[in-house]
Image (cartoon, rainbow over the protein chains, first blue to last red):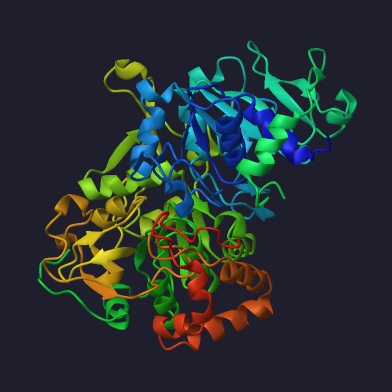
Length: 254
Length: 323
């Protein structure tokens, strides 16, 4: 069955979400992944937004986390203070998985969504952290979305907006961060993971039709490919739900 | 803050009284939802200069104020309107061309900064941002901070947990309070004394209102003095913190106002095209802001679009809207 890279990316992230988890999502493809997970693998997952909507039913896909569509059928709708409290207090926070994207990433999953070039006079300015730094600081598990390009997988991010594993090993603990750290990076070529000891990125799986060499050619830094396998292609059922239920208007699937 | 039974006034009067040149201004709403757009356009029409903006995640309001040259400095977590402009276009240009000073925070840090202002404490702690450039990189120099008593002397401060290892925390980030001169909010319903009822997500409007010296509220509906008193538990902002109440139907347009109307995708897409090009941007400002006597005239000029964005009573937004 034919499918697009974007469809496989969405499903690769959705497959990582466990039933019963609280899923924090940002704008764009991360919302698709959260909705796909809920409809396909994790019916008891709970979708939350930093704007304060908790357990949204999402009848239509929101185009921003501030979109009024995030309120549909929600369990409660309050505000930012409440949403961030839920993801950082130790009782609920350890059940939250955050899905984030960025403009640059390094080998430890540190993210830049602020600026390329010098911070005060950048070559390219982006939106800024929003809630990404908060989520990356607080929650126990994050899944990151990236376009797999050499200029985006860099030795050093130009601005560290959201903490990954910082300088590796127990870097997060030394910095005093509460949450655990990034678990996977989902790209348009591959799924990357982080070594449990060094916290360095490695190749977990490449997409059907691709290769580890192709993945490496799209990065500024090299990663271990010895543990990699080819990812299972989407099943007919996964694609059907994604296309017919999750984003029938193809607003984000494109 | 003002105690009076009737604070109803026109937008011209509210902006001329509470938003002078150089004002420190907080914007309510979130990205493409409930931005106080009518007030923003009035500020642009009055050609205010040197504003200092505070926002968590704001989109349309920030972008139009920056693009019209009203803003000198901005403290912000996120400037974007979702798919319509993942990064606000005039904001991006202004920073890349060095035309505004700016400083980055996270959404939670900004929320806590407003809350600290509202509480009257100098700072609040969080664990967000440890190890990041949000802590390491300042946007405003010590000289800029020293020159304006409304700015704290430092950006963010990391502090050892003074309670030892209580709550399994080694250290915290202290975020300084914000006390805006004025906060602008758009709400669904307000009474003449300033009592506000927000439908749906309140974002950080409650904290932003309580942190400010003055609050200007625009509302879809001005209701009678007693109308919001029957169910006060549904009101988020008490009249005492509000200085001016301005009835402005479609006051958040082209952003959304839950249970009243959706964002206008046609306008926001046209805006993106206009904002990308200098000549088109100047034409946009002239046609859609300066040439409009008031917000009602602007809304009259898009009246054929309004039926498409009417909120569906079942969902609170325009179900099935072509986006």
